[in-house]
Amino acid sequence: MLRTTAKELTARLPGTLPELLGFEIVDIQRGRLRARMPVGPKHLAPNGFLHAASIVALADTACGMATLAHLPDGAENFTTIELKNNFFGTVRSGAVVCEATPAHLGRTTQVWDAEIADESSGRTIAVFRCTQMVLWPR
Image (tube, rainbow, N blue to C red):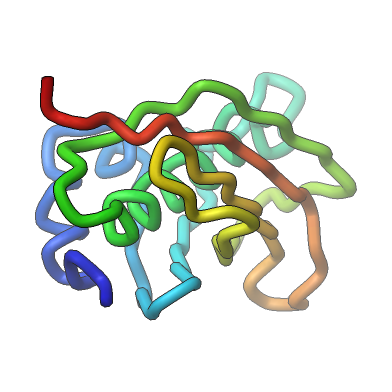
């Protein structure tokens, strides 16, 4: 069972980097979270292409929110302990979407994969994997 809803996750965004970048939590279900980010000038690198950090922030946030929703009973929180990203393309406008799915949902760690795609074409522009440490009360 999920510990939270898309609406509750969205309520955590005000005042954070994800809000600044315009992230939206689109949907959450058991084993899947979808997020979206519009792409504008603030998301671009000085070379005019989508900044890698914008994609990493979207993917890490999507996987983090999914982790929160999938924490084991009794766990308090989580923190990212490792992440990796591969880039295949870019966009300069429009929006990108991110789908996060779990590779492992354990009691001490979770591993999440995310695919980031151009919303208009569906073309995958990056893949991401992170490991989350589950935090327990002391």
